[in-house]
Structures are given as structure tokens and as C-alpha cells.
Image: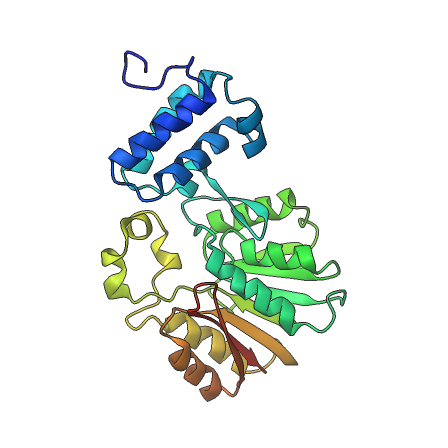
Length: 291
């Protein structure tokens, strides 16, 4: 270690990983070894293979950044926020404070959407409501070579990030963004509507895990007093006609205990409930409606 309390630049990559793991473990961080590895690889721009084959190389000028990252992680800041990037559907995504960290559970939206499409090579028009980092839409476009997509969000910073992510993943020519509140600025028809809207009850956000409550954007979490405000707006707009092509699907992520409530909202707006999908943990995660 250096005399100023940071990491020594001469420390090898392997030794830095051991130190980082021990440091995070001592501060009570669950999954300390995995977090330490993500931070080391991310900050040094390494692959796991690089670490395995060239682990004796000194960390050099990355020492200060790694030391700072460990301090931030020990304070509860998520690894993805520290790195400013995360992976979703095997693709890299840049993050900013206005965007959620893409979570594996949300890949269920992509899986369900792809399963609902009879022809992946069709010239589809897709709408992603509350696009954030653009992860859902970019993932879909990566699987649908002739589709185009529109990502809508209220946040200008999120839309800039979504554009950056689309370009970085080779989808810049097929993904467009619109700033607006849910469906107000849009005209259909679309062949597919997807969304991971805010669905947490306002009153419980402060009591969530600090990685969420202190670091995720509140606008992407807060679903109103009962967590259902966004579903009312989205499903009402779809049910009014014109936004979704007849027979096409709207696929929405939900909270684990919201399936019946959101289904009732959709049916009340004239939509047909077409199925429930569960995530890898077996929890209710995605509902499908047909117009």
C-alpha cells in the first residue's frame, strides 16, 4: 500500500484483486470477490483472460482509481454506477444517473417479446416506453435485423445515453428517441410495445436497499401511491386504439406482486390478457397484452 492510504502502483493485478476482495469483505459487502473482480477488470480495461495470463503485471496508474472505487463501493454505491457501464443481453451499455442499471430480470421482457413475434426478419416498428439506457430496445433490435425502434423517455440525459448506446452497439441507424410523457407524443401503429415502467409504491422507496434508494433515479422507480400509475397511463393509451396494430402485443415488466392488478387495468381498457412470464427466480415478471 502507498503511504497515503491508497493502493501502490507497483502492486500486481492478482495482488490488487486479493486486496480489493479483502477490503470489501471487511466492510460487509456481500459478494465481495465478484465486486472486486468487476471493478478491477472494468477500471483496467481487462478481460478475465488478461487477468489469468498476465496477472503479475503492475496495476500502474489505475491504482488511484481502484482505491477510490473501493471506497465508493464500501459506502454502498453499486459497481455499475462506479464503472458507469453494465452488460445486458450480452451487450455493453453506458449509464448515467438518470438511467437504471440494467438487471437480468428485465431480460425476461426481451425473451417474451421475441417469443411473441412470428417472423424475426419482418420489417417491424417497435416502441419502448421509458427507454432509459435503451437496453431493452437495443437488445431487441440486435435480434430483429429489419426492425426499427423508437425509445421514449422524459429525461433528456437518458435519451442522450440511449442514443450513445444504440450507436455503440451498431443500432444507431435503426433506433430513434423521443422526449415525452408516456404515449402523449406518439402516433402508431406499432407492431410491438415494450416497457419497464416505474412500479414501486412511493411510500416504500426510502426503505429499499440503499443501492436502489440512494443511487437509482427516483423517476424510474416511483409508480405512485399504489405503484400502478404508469400502467394506467400506458394501457389506457393502448386501449384507446391507434398506438398498437390490431393483433400486436404490448409487453410490460411488473413488480413480483402486481400481476393481477395490472392484468385488471389492461382488461378494463379493452385489451386481451395473453400471458404471464416469470424471471429466472420464478417470480412474476412480465405481462403480455394483445390489442
